[in-house]
Image 1 (cartoon, one colour):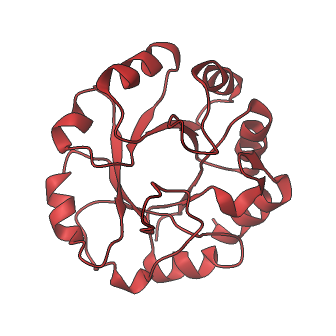
Image 2 (cartoon, one colour):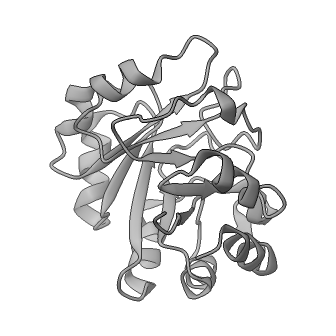
Length: 205
């Protein structure tokens, strides 16, 4: 089995970014969604990206943003990957000439084979818990057993992950990557270095 990649999301400052990168994170998520307690300004995000060592993927998270907002962000922040966490269509996601992943909130009626076909241009599907009115960062997990085998795309597993359950999540789902935000925080928007290191160590190599 391939090594499970690790994304630390909700990075708001360069200190936390460097802690995560030095601990072994493969990717860092920057939230460009004002209602989120982990939202980051364009200037702060640019500083984070500038501070990083090489080979750390930067991911910009957007939720039903106007295309002009995404373009304005990309003009100032050289993101490697886009993550769309709302109801964005495949055509919308493809228009920015950047690789993207599409988040799917795991309602009971979700058909992941259908979503994989619809978003076949995505690099991966990110599976997150569904909580009404909250677009990600819920701190809630979902029943991993509902994920079907042999989906035709990589899976990024999110939702309620932390150091004490991520090893089981990886063993159960065997995702391409795991994504954590609240599970490694001291408080919303600020990471806890020890929690970051513990999480990454539990994912394994």
